[in-house]
Amino acid sequence: MFLCCVCDEKRKVTGSRPAAGVCPNCGGGTSQVRVLNMFRFCFIPVCCTTHSRLMCTRCGAQLRR
Ligand SMILES: [Zn+2]
Image 1 (cartoon, rainbow, N blue to C red):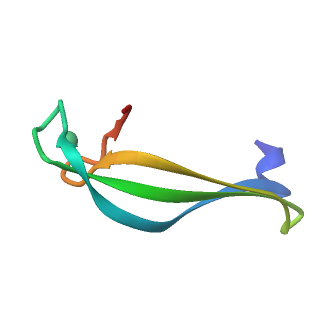
Image 2: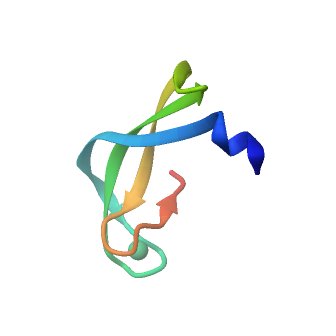
């Protein structure tokens, strides 16, 4: 847990758009979101990755395509 003080990971949604399909859990609509993952060490960003995910807009579940 001490590592959390100097090293952390931030996630930020940089964009989203409606996607086709429905959530298998609640039947709600889905959206394609772009998530920016930033790993920081001593508050200095050392790694930055982006990926897109399909998420339910109603219950927030992450879905696989
Ligand atoms: Zn859902």
